[in-house]
Image 1 (spheres, rainbow, N blue to C red):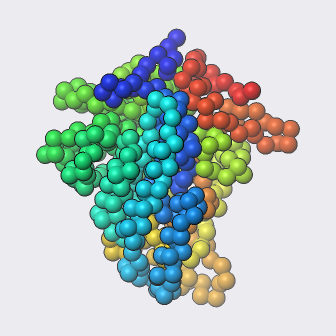
Image 2 (image 1 turned 90 degrees about the vertical axis):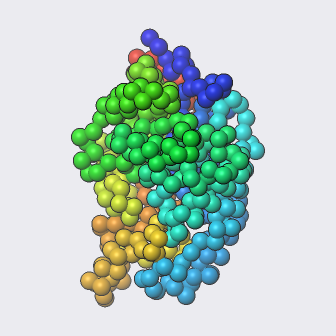
Image 3 (image 1 turned 90 degrees about the horizontal axis):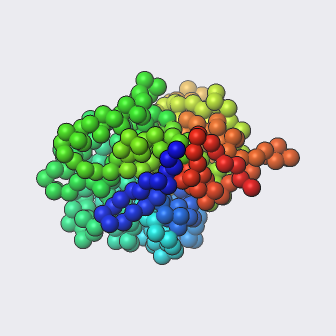
Length: 414
């Protein structure tokens, strides 16, 4: 019976434990979690989602306060086109977060940063360019392009001195998305170093419609493997979404995957950024408590716990402070939904918005409880304590269980 530890992820001459922990935002995949995964020989991720907000919390910057002061005059205006990010501050926030991780790194593993294209920030191309290039400037081992097709992202980095040095990969959920990406970037003579294939059971935003249940990760991975062989392309394929045990991982590795990406089990690691009370909500969840809805202003379906406080919340849009999902015209579908409800209930002191949510504010405050499909199984990975709560795990325990377990077994903590 093979174990994950019988395989290795290879980037050139470097060999790693074939476990990649996904980049969960906002600051759920913390630098501390990524550092521990790297120490153990795998690939850890930090997320660049809302980094100016994250650095205020972690490194005592004042980016949010300064932005709010600059645009306070616009708070009551539904037109947010004037609300812009200071690109210098975006770069500085990225440098602070990445440098903290890279300067603290120990062990033989690697640290990547997850960059979401859907964080459009009222200047999609300009802000994404700064985010990508600043991460490279600061020595990140690799970048994982997520939440979008990223047809222009390699072009934003092509003249950077580390463009061919850093490990650059993309998350796709279909062969078609991968083909579009490869075709668009063919002229750069630069293939991705890895491809994460994310299936319909993943957490957070999904690369599928509301028909997600009709799709299967194994089928998508097999289709992409076949295409890569036909095109004579040798790029590491890394399945993701619903890989809950070491045995789940081995099934993909035996079929030719280079590694697996996992995340859900690490949401209840001590090193994870979720508050401890929210971790207990994840532990307590039943299968019926895990839902997929369309409240995200990004347009992507999103998986979360059904008791997440963000659902139905009618808070005023926080674009002057945050505004990470404003499109190139300064619009966000939550603003439209909020204004509609305010107009429909002019005398109400508190309104409810059911169809969309202010994702920036709620993610910043850990009030949007995004999760993977198998979150309801987390209670089976630990002990229930006498007070009714569940024992929080260490990242090392979870990593080692993936690495060495067999027969679909999950080792409980000491």
